[in-house]
Length: 477
Image (cartoon, rainbow, N blue to C red; front, side, top):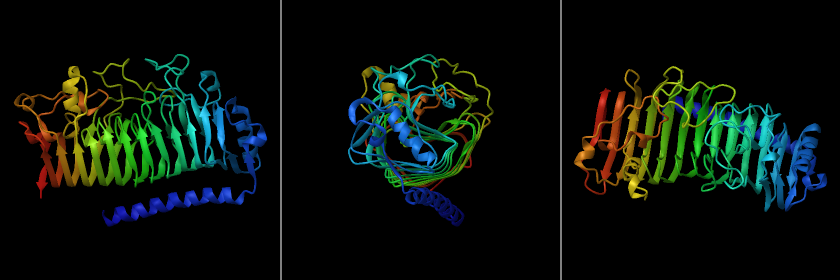
């Protein structure tokens, strides 16, 4: 890491930790503890406790702040609003359980979500000094039999996400286990000074779209020492309007059915000054790292280092595309109802200044039905770095890589032509089986491989590296 980046990292971490300390100071200064049982909460796993839990939160914030304590028990609730200067603290074996009745998630007074439906379990807006802590669990219980998957935007009975915080500052997640949302997991929108530490996320095989963390347009965020298993993207930076800036992720263990680490797809504001280090990604059949700008915006000064990946699909997918989505008050997140052959209107963004180093990856093929054999092989693909004609991915350095691939590519695979798919929602396997087994680079400038060791476990008839419309490529040992 350069001296400039090291200084930047120390400043960012200092800012975030100072904010976290400020949050702790508020909790420590407040003498009052608000036990939810004193407000009528019943932890029997059946009684609906929304009014009692909300009353405890409201009393706490009206008194100037303090701790809302949740003793051991199972507390069923609908939507809860967290407020300024409140610490929500769960004892060991304390569970806040999401109601399985859609009527308990009203949206009339909630700020409309910019992406997807607005229903959620825990909600906050324009608040400061919020802390969630303890040894308990927050479980959305979002099973398909209670919250059916919808095919398109709108309609009733939409699936609630687990948490949505909008425009909040000094937010801390410490400890706790988060489980089973019906939609996205923990969604932070335009929040500042966020510290997420020691959190456990268990959101696999529960429902669809079960992201772990969605960080949209936030600044000064530190995610560390977390254990995350998500059905969809595990750590996902989004940028529907404003940039994600000064984000640090470190010392996390991550699994995902879709991507362990993803930037995009919403990318209007971009991703600037991001540092990810010392993480273990495992069991990620659709890929480990995905860095994408497809709705405009800039991706600059991204540093990723000390990453081990085991049993993953493509280890790295960098994509500059032209979906061009423009985000309004409430924007559909899916793809089925949209024209994949036309940009939605936003200008093309830029991707430059990416440095990824010290990566070890074992790429595998996940078992699928024979009718999906091509997709199976395409998912376990090479490193892919691709812009679009006239718009190039620039200044990418991969250093100290050691990647093992399954091999078994044929001569027919080596002759495949790769579609551009400029405006389509970007997943690497959409491009099909690529004509390279190690790295496929297209529409790019100044890409450098330093000490990149790519190997196959079985023979492969394709080329190790294929370059298409690439200038300034350099490979050194």
